Length: 93
Image (cartoon, rainbow, N blue to C red; front, side):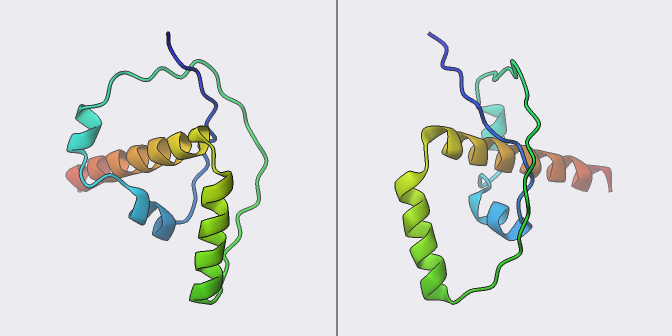
């Protein structure tokens, strides 16, 4: 049975994505086919935040407690797609 999931594909900060991106684009070639069956546009606000390391660590801990499987899937897909596009851009230069 195929599992359907809803994942927001909004662009977040480059710093956050750099730490989440797969080690290489070779990992993308190993993935099975993922079909986009529908999309939804969502309104969001992007914030650039500055905080102490202890505050950041606390927010990460809280986020891990409430994150869903769909959150992790969305992060992985977004990071993989961005790395793939960056690799294509670097090849064309």
